[in-house]
Image (cartoon, rainbow over all chains, first blue to last red; front, side):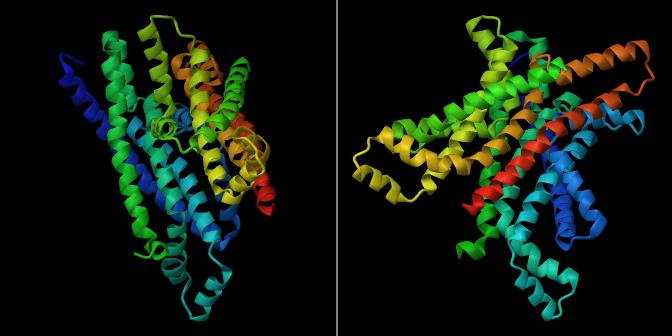
Length: 220
Length: 210
């Protein structure tokens, strides 16, 4: 890697930020889908599936993402296929995020009163329609704050994927410093700025989204 | 197993220090003085928005670069996790303090208590019970995040198991050691954290009855 001036550094960090955003975005969406499916299954208390989901959620919530990543990246190839670091980080973060999202959405679902479910049955809504029109809109509105927090958490968690060689911000920073120890201060500053550039707009977008989704509660 | 001891040591020291400091800073954050309030808020946001990994990195390389001294990686990791935990707990303390009814403040003023007496005898005892589940929850997160310290070279459980994997690979390149070792690590962490998260759930239920 050639580093002649500050612009090269900025270029490297811009590229790394893009990768971080990409991984975060894909895994947030997959995690959300996993969360929706799992919490719906939990809501209907499907016998065996319920237990499996419970184990999955508890397992991913109670082990460090770092070791999950190591396990999938270095452990699994022995018995399964070798994945590249991008796919691997997306898998780890999606599964991790899915567990958190499931928890968040399910706690929103629990807050909905039982009456509503019975009412939906009474007016003849099908199971799918009940979920689609009654349960999901309400539970997402209740748990949107938790979902946003989880998304931000996932974006920050991308930095741990450094250890499986995903060329994101922290990886690049370590890389540059190991080559050029004199660049340590600009690298640290740039690294911090990159995260702020990603996260500050994100928090703003999320708080706007929160207002939008919860408009029924805010009333405007 | 030595590695596991270091992981637990860092987590426990950081947790105790951050509970202590967190309460102090949490109380300070409720003050109306802008000079105290605003910098603390900025620090809080900084520690929440930026991943502890980056703070570890900044402290580890930054301190040795600026002061030209050899940094001890265990001390650095304790400092970083203490700061991180402090601000998390401070924010919890602040939100719980603000949720107390205003009459509490006024009545303790009416009784002629000083500010310090008010916090020690009236306000903090009330929130300590309510805050415990969240702190236990934080402890789980702290233990999980301490895996990161191996990146600055602390010989904790992950580093030790990597060394084992290395040694085994050198003698027998076809072994399944990486799979079993990482699985073992996952199980160790699960055994450590799962009781804590159950405890926090249990405490939450107890507190909600109050």
